[in-house]
Image (cartoon, rainbow, N blue to C red; front, top):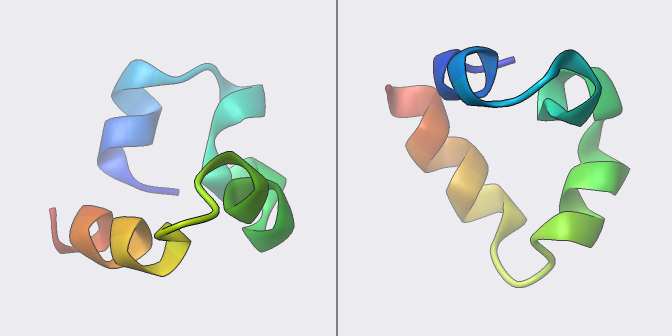
Length: 41
């Protein structure tokens, strides 16, 4: 789970709760890039 998700998303929508498959379905083009840029914060 990342800090932005904690502040902006309800628990059931955070990638930390849903896992990689759900995240990939939401942002299929660049899931890994989004993860890396968010993790830096």
